[in-house]
Structure formats: structure tokens, C-alpha cells
Length: 355
Image 1 (tube, helix red, strand yellow):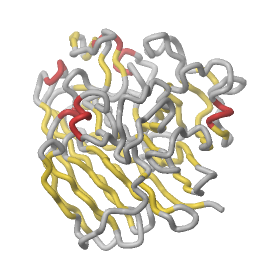
Image 2 (cartoon, rainbow, N blue to C red):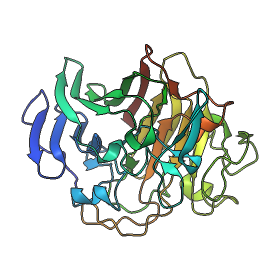
Image 3 (cartoon, one colour):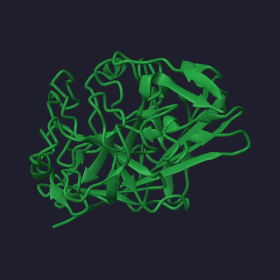
């Protein structure tokens, strides 16, 4: 397993070319978190974090062969967009005009369509200050890209802080109204990326409501209270216990409704803790929703970086975002970006250890 961080040749960040990944950027402060980002898909490929004993491990799932990110490991660690999550049948209306997006095999649009932002080579430059180090990534999405209206310029910063925080900040501008919903799709295992399943992890989610879905994982009605359901994670609960509840067959792949929202300040959305290692990850975000996916559909197809095949529950994705299908759900927070307004979103992952 990847128990030790890659050697830092110093700061600012180090860039190495890669045939498929585009560029591999490695960055971090000596003695603190170390991250690796690939420019194909603006992808978090690795994150080395110490446990309670000071032993380092890579806690982000990624394939042994980066080319697998074109197929079975497509979304691993990627920046997904122009619209993260699902849009029913790939259709929506905006200002009285209907739009048809590209769709996947199930007939819906997922994470931006068949050729979403996760497939693109992003431009990158290093960022380094006394407190933060990392990369700034840029992508231009043209009018009509995957069926979305308007030219969209997107910037994502991925930065490591001296206080063991990993920050994702997103910004975008458009020349025509368009839905925008960006997130990072990393899978985490706080024991290490090749350690097996995450059933021993404890999860808490700061949400009193969730979004029920149909068989295609499209919202099927209004948000419902989590109280008395399998989705009540307001207190820390082991995933083994949570997934044994009725109603969680196949695991979680659901949106949780967060509050507060809208003041531009990252608020706590979730806490993930691995008792076996003491690694503790707090998720803070400006977004209104959190998609929790426990990878119940993983079937061992993907061979991980450490040589372990990723089976069901090998990691957990905690995707901070707007709600699924919200372009078609006027009661949800609007994902529409208009000319003259800048899209802004920020998510912070704060790491520590517990005894």
C-alpha cells in the first residue's frame, strides 16, 4: 500500500508530464498533507494523510492505470460538470426554451453528459503563498457543449493549507443563462485506499431532510425528513450499522439537504472518521446539498494504485453540490448562472486525528 507520501522536492508545487494524465502536480508542506492532482479531469489522484501514530497513507481511491479514468474509473477524483449529478432524460427548459443534453445508457444526463468536464485536459498553473500551496485549473466550455447553452469559463483551485486542510474553490462566468453545478468526485477510505471496505468508518451528516429517488436515482418527490428513516445520520453512526437499516439496499446514493446555506461561508456538512486509524475528515461547504455515495456498485473491476481491486464499499464519495435534477425542480435552490454574475462555490476538507 502507499504508506508514505511522495517525496516533496520543495515548494511551490512540482509538475511532471504524463502521457494520459496530462500533468501530475504534487504539492504540500513538509510534515503536512500531500496531494497529487492530474490535469485530465482536474482530478484529485492522491492525498497522503497521517494516522494517530504518524503513519502516512494515501486515502483517495484511484486506478493503477490512469487510462481507466476513461472507462470503469471515469469519475474517480474528477471535477464533474457542467452539471454534477443527474438531469432527468437530459432535458430542461430555461427562460422558455427547451434544451436536450447528451445522455448516458439509462437515458439521463449524469455529471455533465457523455463528454463531461472529467474527460477534458485542463490548463494548470501553480499557486503558492505562505499558508496555501496547490494548483489553479482552467477550462472553457463552448456554447452547445453537451447541449448546454452559453460559453462557460471555469476555474478550480485545489490547495493544501498548513493547517491540514484541502480546499476546492470553484468559479465560473457565462455569456448566456445556463445551469452550473460543479463538484469533486473523490472516493475516500481513511484506513488507506487499498485497505478494503469502509464499513468500519463512522459518518455524520448535518441534514434534517433528504431527497427520495426512483429506480433511476431521479428525485421522486419533495424532500423528506430523515427522522425515523435510514437516512438519519445526524449523529455519528458506523456505516456497517447505517447500511444494515431497512431501505439502504445497495448502499447510499442520495442527496442530503444541508442548512444553513447561502451566506457564502463554508458550513459543516459531514464528518467521516475511521476508528482503526484515528483519521478524521470534516467536510465544510457553501453548497446546499451533499450526495453521499457508498460505492455499493463497485464490483472489483478497477485495480487500485496499491494493487487491490476495489470491491463494493471500497470508498465513500461526499459530493458537495446543488440538488439532482434541480433545473426541473423550481422549489430547489436555482443552479442557473446568468451573464454578469460569477458562480462561486467552496468546499474544505479538514483533517485531524482522534485517539
